[in-house]
Image (cartoon, rainbow, N blue to C red; front, side, top):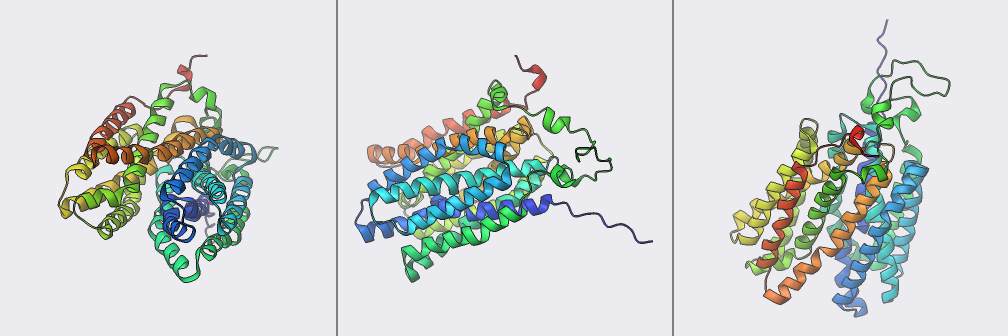
Length: 422
């Protein structure tokens, strides 16, 4: 008698869709949009400061919208949300293809940041924890690969599309990819929770009988009854300290990435070497995401994050004081490692601490804070360069933030709901 084949756990299909979502949100990310900026300046004669200010305003406003997106996910589910968000993102990209005035680019920036960089990053971070618990770390490590592939491949592809076919075609290419590839896949294949299709988190075999409402008899209290509402989470010290620790890398990474060419030029190297360092960061991050996923299944997330911020302190020292190419390459490798552990640990953190049931609202608020941090990051670096003629002073001041973040993480273990004061 043949042995009954174990059913495939649908969560790994969800992981693949999550990786696709992070890849296809790339047209709304800074590394993609930056390729278009010089072409706009050349074609329309707009100033760099004008476009930069529009981009910062759009990013700030889009960041404020993330709690509302998180609320939509909690109420309507991931399948509906991904359909709505990808459709609106595709329309925003079509709008960008028709930009010919400053007010049009401001509106376009607002919506590609809101739906691409914001909402399409938020959905996988809320969806994956519905399907994985003990295997959450490795699941997020695979999902993160989609984002890293986007950062490595989209900028040169954008440059090719613009040079060969123009700005309009480049935006329409991505609009078509979102509307005819990503949106159908999301709507057809996304399922909100494993319980909806008779499975359990992590693919644990369900040997229980079904109840009359077609749900498993297995006790799900530790997954849903112990979930925290946003208001309950906000009453804990861990919520605010971990929120701060999430903002720090969003702010500093965006700042030195935005000014990377200038920082490296100051050290006597050209833009090509700066681009090489950025590529080295992306390649290392891709490799280290798998290590991060494994470690986070073995070690408490707050300890991983605290240790990672100690590494970040060293990274900023290397960026500030290193002059030799070899040391700067070491900086890039360490920064890629930090980025991998930071990304995976942040995605694991919120469901581990506050459960699945209200994760959309909680992650929406966290995403809002991170996006606002990323919008504000480059400005102090630019001001410091104008005032001091370099970046040494601002990089030294920046060392305060990872120091505080490491302390915050050490003192932020997972909260216990029974200890919550009513």
